Length: 341
Image 1 (cartoon, helix red, strand yellow):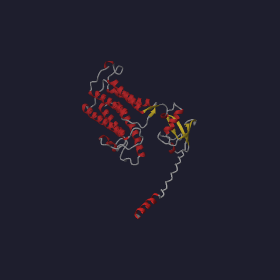
Image 2 (cartoon, rainbow, N blue to C red):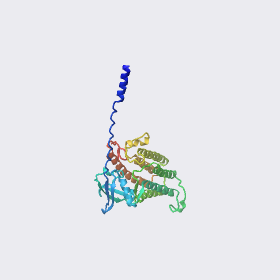
Image 3 (cartoon, one colour):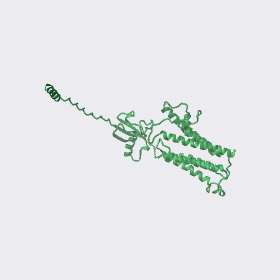
Image 4 (spheres, rainbow, N blue to C red):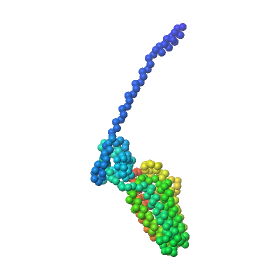
């Protein structure tokens, strides 16, 4: 009985024990105060105030500001705008963030009109379709190109037909790469530049085609051996060019602007990355050297030399950009020619 009484008394005392205190609720967090920016846009030439934007969020990008400016000025779409912090400074990139710029809560931007724009893809297509069509006009010897007795006649030299196939293949490849492979870092270019770009490619195509398809054209000095060797060089470099373009495409995801160092892959054609920064230009040069050797034609040689000079300028600029942006960039690489240039 005493044991039962003690157990009952213990249970009663346990049930009567006070409950543990409830934790105090945490006070609600005060929302962070957002410091909005005031953005002023001035004309770069006249210093006239074009727009004043109030309460711009600090996380807004330059592209966001361009879009706001476009709403007030519909004829100045974002691709046509260039904004900078100083009239003599560099244009700001679209992805730069307002709060990360060296400005206070009142930011002043200087606006420059870049003129009517056209997409790089469209420019590439027009550049490539022109030479493709122009060359075929001379190949089929349409009227008013050569003497009337040669109208719609075919050349008796095999190299002329091989050259036409190679030229057409090259530009068809470039068209398909523009449509399905290339990812352009710059969306647009000034419309006025298309005339300069197209005149270069179109005029050279007409000049080359006129002499290669001329009724009095003579084959290369070493004949069939020279043509076969040149054809092998041309096709090898065309495959190399395509391989490099595919490697560069796989390096960058759609819509991503983060730059990466290109490295050789399992594809042997990409091993050129171990020696040069722009192997696509190296292979392009090799293709036109092969075409020059195949046709043994002065206009083709001249086009190859001019193209090499221009590609060297582009390759050096790209090489400097890599060295500036990546501290770990391979020092063995040259811009376009291994160990030379």
